[in-house]
Image 1 (cartoon, rainbow, N blue to C red):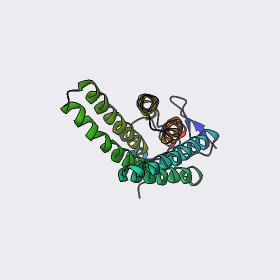
Image 2: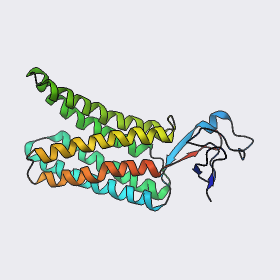
Image 3: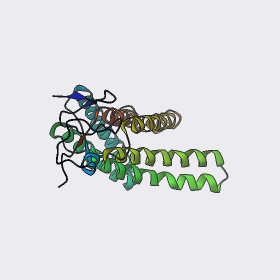
Image 4: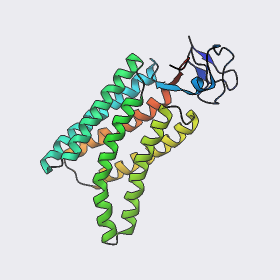
Length: 226
């Protein structure tokens, strides 16, 4: 049974003692709860339609990325193969988390590792652009790399309850929109052949699924320190 925050009206889980939105405690705080225990929380996915849609999109996007990365093996790009496998494993954990109440910290970490590895592939391109005085493209891809790492960082910080929900949604939403736009631009302008189809599905499903997952997630505080 759900309830709402006494101070801001945000919808809470039945056993929430600490509002993830305004940061204030509720009147039904157990006597053995401390300020520290109120601030400790786990980000979980409730069993609703929005969270189900989010994990379906994430899993679909991850599988599409894996096919894209498998095709990249024809060019002997093993790093993308690792990225594809890590992304799929993370998506499976995301799917399991939706049905078991497992914390989202683990799938977010797996997604983060895959993102960092993929961004390393862009670093050589950035160096080449700067060395050949293509300043615009060098800065363009440098910012792209930083935004990719930042969106994972903010998602992880929210998963361990270090930033508030509204701030996380705004920052992550803006960053994901920027990343999706860049991927779409690259996909449309570059000639990647058949692999572009799988990358396009990944672009249109995975990151929007991540945002919907963050949007639907709830912070479930610990009732006491263990």
